[in-house]
Image (cartoon, rainbow, N blue to C red):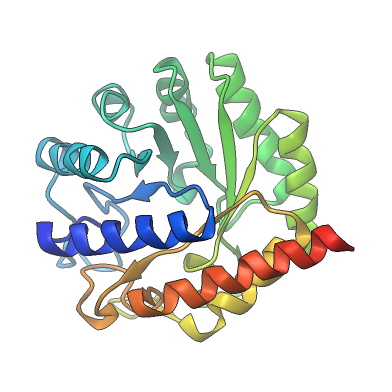
Length: 253
């Protein structure tokens, strides 16, 4: 979620530099509204108009692509004027009107796989986007429900989803931070296992994903959202270096 300007800049500047050093493409992601919160009292962000202005400023500052999530069809067009990639949240990946509105903008669209969905079922989301006119699509894995208060990553299924994406010309991303969530249940916030983030990311690279989603913050406990799973900004370089080494080792095999 978007933070204050100083924090947004610190995160963006640091990430852009690290990715440049490692020869990686960086996409800045922030939410103008976190519509799916455990509590009605949880912070949600600056809202559509102010939030998009803040994201536009970061795009200009960093000179990198930017993305944000949309939750309502009416948000697709204004967001598409600012961002390079529209993101469909996991819980909304079956919403036909939302997918169609995102596709109609002509922007690239990233759909996060619902925690309740099998990898194979994401074909329906891709077909909806394609029928809506989208030509640039991406899928993102972010864990699957395993009973109550638990997510697991099915790496056999992730491999299947990568193959599905390739059929549509769509790269596959792995969300290494949200996949460590322990969904809230009767609590007022979601728990997590951030210590497993790098481990899952390396495993996803070994399966063959095209991109990694990594949420970070200078002070995770101070983060307005996902404080239980977010990575310290100081840890990111080491994580990304390990992913680069993993991919290089696989290429050499």
